[in-house]
Length: 124
Image 1 (cartoon, rainbow, N blue to C red):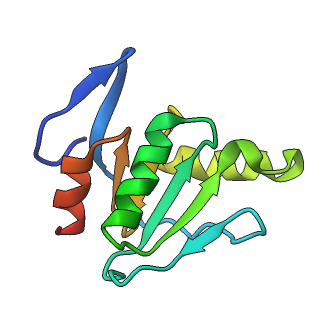
Image 2: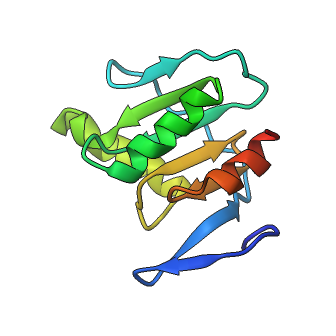
């Protein structure tokens, strides 16, 4: 399930980098998705977060400070009519729906705030 590195547990949920067995369709962009442009765009990065989550803010800050291009959504700010679809898409990557969730190249997912793992997976 995990590729290399250590896994850790928080509140009984497996956290860390997980292999994603098959390529998924790209999430449909709506008004609620933000595209953050950075000079480093060699990876496709999709970030699911919450506006009220401190770890999500730290993850976003990490990506921005490292000038990574990424797509971002604050799931809690998505209109109710669209939220189910966003959560369903996120569940494909992270069935436990933990935040933050960062998907890299439709192949790996980093769950939780882990700058060391992000650095490794993004080649920083």
